[in-house]
Amino acid sequence: MRREIQLPMVLSVSLAIVWFFVPAISYKSSVYSLDIMGFGFSVSFLNLRNVIYSALPLASLGYALVGGALPIVWRTKYSLYLSSLSFALSGSMMLTSLIYVERYMHYAGYSLLPSPTGYFFIYSPVEINVGPPTFLVFTLLGISLMNLWKGASWMGRRLTLFERTIRGLERGDLKGLLRFLKEINAPFTIREWGIETEGMEIRPEGSTDKINLLFPRGKTRIVIGKRMVIINHGHDIKVIDHKQLIKYLFNELGGKETKVLVEEYAE
Image 1 (cartoon, rainbow, N blue to C red):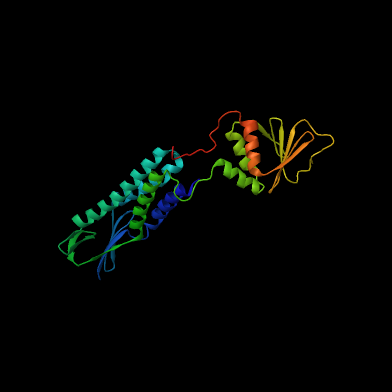
Image 2 (cartoon, rainbow, N blue to C red):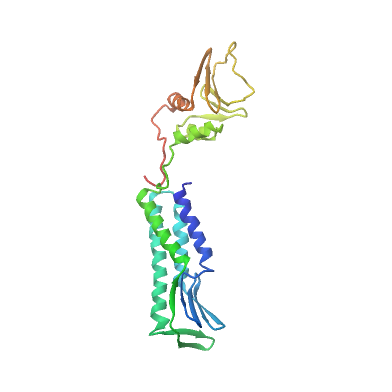
């Protein structure tokens, strides 16, 4: 999975955790404080603390989580549109929470203080502090817009299937080769010694069944090493590199035009 898609999900989960402990925006004075938390508003006066639960911060948090999960669950370009919209709604809900506090909980230097018996105003000039959750929400919006603009491929060029297969072969890994064979619609069978496909046996270096020059089998034998590839067809032996091997397999097994590079989000 691309880093561009993983990053928003990681940040949105981090937001969900951090916002329940650190306020997004706080109003503080020497005796009074009001914090906009993920569950609502936390109001403290001297040693008295009260919580006012609100749907606005919860909606902001919910939209952020949905925006992070959408491109993972639904891997199309349309999920990027919905993800950006979801993060925009998350930011707007946070701003609406701030407007609500400014409109209904502060007036002309007076601050609203909830109590077990009701509400009353105290005169306590406050200063506003912005916390990490606010920056996280708008960072998520910026990343989602970048994903939408660049098709979720701006943190480095995405390798083609051709390039990924070669890198795997250089590490002695045949899993990438299996994906390549699936992509070109070539039938194959996985054996304990390697891969068997149409008229070919593909084995990793160090296979116990060696190439026999005197009594060759009818199938083409391909032995893949980390530096070179040996192709044994009858009495004919070729030594090629991994790039030439992929081209050879594509020409022999592809049969028709195949889309080697599949882009999930930018189509």
